[in-house]
Length: 169
Image (cartoon, rainbow, N blue to C red; front, side):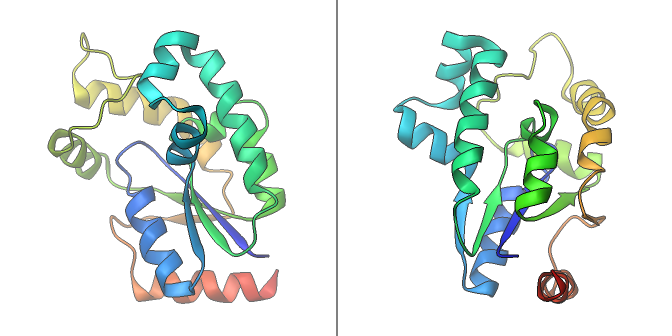
């Protein structure tokens, strides 16, 4: 097996962990949102604004399918990628799925410090409430991952465990 798919809530550290892990492994790193933006010529918020969530998810699924042909790469998925259609099952068939189960208080802190526009975050709802609601809705999908990492940051133990698992597959 030569691909790792990182899933988790926005702010869980998928991009940070993906870059760290790909560097440690000598593999390529792919941020699914960046792949979409580069190929569509628009940012995620613009695509959401024009097509709505359903339209965006179809585009996201198209580019996720492209990653299945990649070799030796770590893919940071959008927070909603595993929830749409049968994406989680497809990722599990094509690579090692890893759920970054970061503490909700840490996610909230990271999102407050970040200035990234997140299309699904409502202005009428507090950040804490929104994260809690998303967690409730998405956890059943994320929990289907082959590996669940219950820490806020990657560690050497995390790397060694994944490396060992990949050698078994």
